[in-house]
Length: 447
Image (tube, rainbow, N blue to C red; front, side):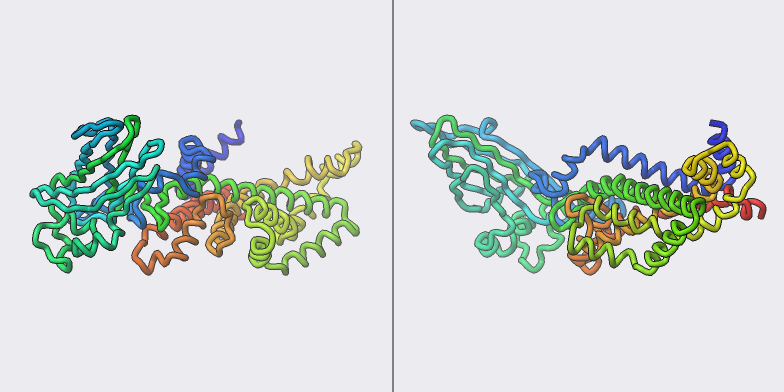
């Protein structure tokens, strides 16, 4: 406990260490929030597909971008109605005629991205009929057609070409525009007020039920926006945090600890064991890790755990063995090591209890600064298309953005958000690691 107190007293002297700790604490808090608020299975469903996708707009910017816009971009509006709340217009044997009104208040100066009507009909044999009528605040009416309802369906008003041809423009523009506006002059001429979608339903069964949901898809959504598949990018930004930290931490621990143990064993045991370790290290230093990982991902598996195993395996016999060996050679001949041998300490006791603890103070700063390198490695693999196909990660967001031409199409938020997360994570660990290096390294401390 006293050791941690002394370490904290030393770290407080360096503002960079405090900033680094604050950034690391922020990422740890985000990781805990992601794991607790969005359980793993739910996060996979949110990222890989679910019914909630249909409520999100496509390629929408974050909602906070409206703070500095003069003309606010529309947000998504969802209006629901069921046949239990509808007005009964007429009854007849084994059926009834209902009128369902979906009030649609719209006060934005820009048109929505698109409009869809989702209908869910519960019946046994006879399919209900629905006639759609759009009513504007100034009393104009537009016939949107008649549909024979199935169990569950999506009626796309914006992508109906026949309707667009009759109205002179896509439905989400023509229905919300001012009267008399020409198709080429519709942009920015929105008619504010309460629009209404009226459904005349004819149901041929007493127990038949119909529920509807009208969605006007906005051009902004949430804190992080959406991608080309209507996915909320906040899910990947949040869950990418614990995945990145876990990958970086496990890879750093696996490579650092095993490398130190192998180097210490080679120094103490010497002979052919030390020679073999050095030759394996020299061969491994020639092999480039990234191409090997690309080959593993392309030919074997893209699982993040397989990649982690390969990273640790190649990281054991890295250049760190040479550095640790040079640090441990003087320790091997220290007097207290001779004393340990005199009272009969075994090889592994000397290695683990007497040699390794002597170099741990120098190891800790190197370990901290090594974590972000593995975080960037995982993101690099995902950007190359070799990331885990299941997990939502920062690199996966960047890969999708690159594939869909996000920067070319002006979707800068799609690239900036994960890039900022990567840079801040690297900055936090680097600032803390450099400060700890000044504390633990005798040469830097003396300067």
